[in-house]
Each structure stands twice: as C-alpha cells, then as structure tokens.
Image (tube, rainbow, N blue to C red):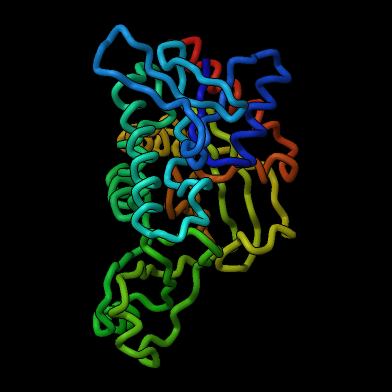
Length: 312
C-alpha cells in the first residue's frame, strides 16, 4: 500500500493517484491532513496488539501495518471543519491536536519508507542549510546575506553589486516572487527590521534549470527567459535538458546529505554555462512541466513510488 499525506484537492496527489489507478495499482490512498476533524479514523494505542489507523480521502480507514511507502507531500494545514469557528482557542486546539495526532501516529506506528522523512523534509527546507550543503559538495552558490540590518544590507550591495531579495521561509497565500534590490538606501530602516530576509548576488544569465529528481532518476527542463523569476510567465521557451553527469552526481550527493529521496531543484546557468545552485524544494511542483516538455513525469513518479514499494 502507498499512502500520501497532503491537503484536500491537491492536484499532484490526485494526479499521481489516478495515474497509479490507471496502471492497475489500486492500493494508493490520500490522507487529507486538513480533514482529520469531523470524522473518525486516526487511532493509536500503546498496546502493540492494536492496529494503528488513519482515514483516507475516500472515507476508508486503513491500517499503517499494510503500508510500505508514505509520500510526505503536505502536512501543515488547518482543519477545514473548524475554519468558521469563532472561538480562537477552540480553533487552535482542534488544529494543533489533529496535526499532532496524525504526525504522532505516523511517527510511532509507520514502519515503511518515507518520501521523504518529516525530519529530513523540514531540515532540507531550510534555505541556508541547503546552500551550505550544496557549497560543501562543490556547487557554486550565490553570495548570500541573511539580515534585518539596513546597514549590513547597504554594505553587502556595495560589495556584491546587483542584489536580489527573497523571503527566508515565506507564507501561505499569494506567491512572493524574487525581486531586485537596487537601492537599499532609499528604504526605511523599519522595513529591514521587520524580519530578516535573504539577500543574494544577482547571477547574470537567461537559462534556468528546473530539475526533478525521483530517486536515482532525473528529468530537467531548461527555461529561457530574461526575467528574474520565471514562475509568473511560462510563455517562454521551455525544453528538455540533459543533466550532465558531473551535475547529476553532485545533485545526488546533496540530496543524500540532506536525507531526501526526491527533490525539485532550481539551478541557474551563468553566461559561460557554469551551474549555480539556487535551492531545492523537498516537495516542489513538477507536473506543470509534463505538457511543456512532453515528458510523462507522472508516470516516472509512479515508477519511483512503485520501485520503493517493491524494495520494501
């Protein structure tokens, strides 16, 4: 049995499950982490003779002892059943206890393979840590400053030249796109002090690599645009890109050191073609590339999950 933890109506989880179903694999279930409240299903007991169970999106309850692979896609979400509850304390109690119970039951009772483990996923999502690991492996990384000091940022811009700014973690809601920071002197000190941000040297070039790594297999797209952040406009040349062997080895080494079984990686090529590591998302979006590259990424990902299930 393959399980995935995600939110209700997650396109990736639904599409991958449907792909598995079309191929005849019917033991693929979604645990909707935002729909634990309001229906039974989560159960665990210290008595080891009792089965530990979780609810699925189709209304079933399954035992964790039957699962061999758990795709840890999305976990942090509030419960839909209490969204309209006015009492803030009650709402937080339900949200926290549903999240804690589901995570605790899985940690205590699940014995199969994680794609990827919660600990590795959380650790690897740290942009600063992953930059340090990528640099240790041998990737060039942008010169980076994390600060909430206006003076430090001004001095960094003087030393580095053109600089971009992006959030350290970000927040749910509208996407926060990467921006240029051309004149920090004109920005009030209070804006910097509000919270730390990531300031990085701008890497010139118009070739961006979106690299999807599923286990030992990699599928990459080359996105050609002069835009700083390619995400708002995909109406640009996007083609399949063969990952060089040296880069492939480095990527696998980074993911291994981060403890990740998969990763969605952003790399930028300099004008001379040198790859610069930007970041890895442990559970990033990849299906948008399927029609653009005419590459069956959903099939590849199901192959990856099934191979993990077969390996036990």
